[in-house]
Image 1 (tube, rainbow, N blue to C red):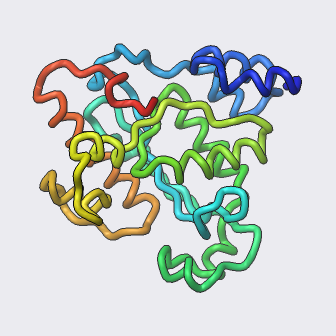
Image 2 (cartoon, helix red, strand yellow):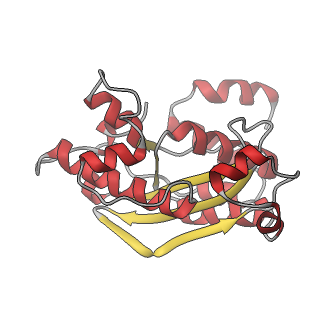
Length: 231
């Protein structure tokens, strides 16, 4: 993309930005993903398609750290499609540090069996096309996937996002430390406990939490997708 257009791109509204990048990117899985428009903001949330994502990484900096695993599952409105659930290990660029292994329990031996990042990203983008991304504390997922898209395909991740943590924070601006963690929010909605720090388990946990939050916010009435999206 010409430098001037690259500079102007962040100033454009979402749909125009997608069209701009689609027009200037070479053929790639990212370009194919951008070709499929997401649902309109006015769509009732029960009619929209979603994809819940969780990543395990070697740290918190997308510029320096690596993705170790993707976990994702698709939703059609209020229904989680378990047949679409995926868990994929990614081969990191460098040896793992002990601190991160303690959290995600992916050892060097397991990580060495992972796939190239581009192979996993290609399949992820194919499933994401036309869907709204769901994540708990989405800056981690969007930051790392955006960095991966830039590295592999030369363009940004452009997708509407629902952040279950942001929804909870909007509902309770005054909150106790730890009360917005995924497990704590699930307990508040009477959802079962799942093991933490496994990408697929956490993606399913975020998907279920989103459904509980949306049901509570709609209280059985209409609720537009736009009211749930991050700005």
